[in-house]
Image (cartoon, rainbow, N blue to C red; front, side):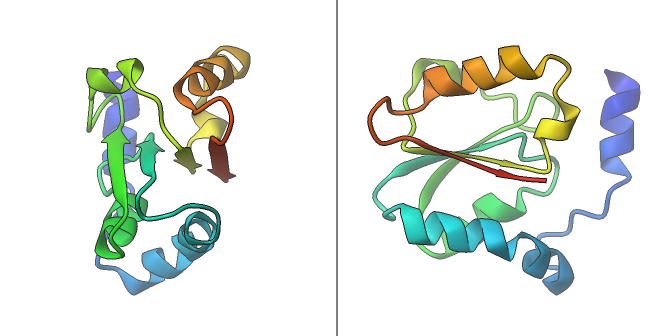
Length: 118
């Protein structure tokens, strides 16, 4: 786990980098087209530079961050979200079936959206 965390710290995840902002813009656009700013979102696996959370918050969206290394927020497991973003995350799942099943339990059963970008 420590070597994995160190590898993630080597990534250039500067939330003010316009190139990085442009890279994640399809995710931000998708959220804005599907969700209201009143909906509760989760940036799952947000990493050390939670760019999607930052950009959505700048647009008035309510979004929580979770990352096992950088934002270990155990309160998320007791909540229900209107949408979950997994940007550059699912390819790192050790057990994809288990992880997707966990994410499903966090989504609103009737209107929840999982937005994956990889």
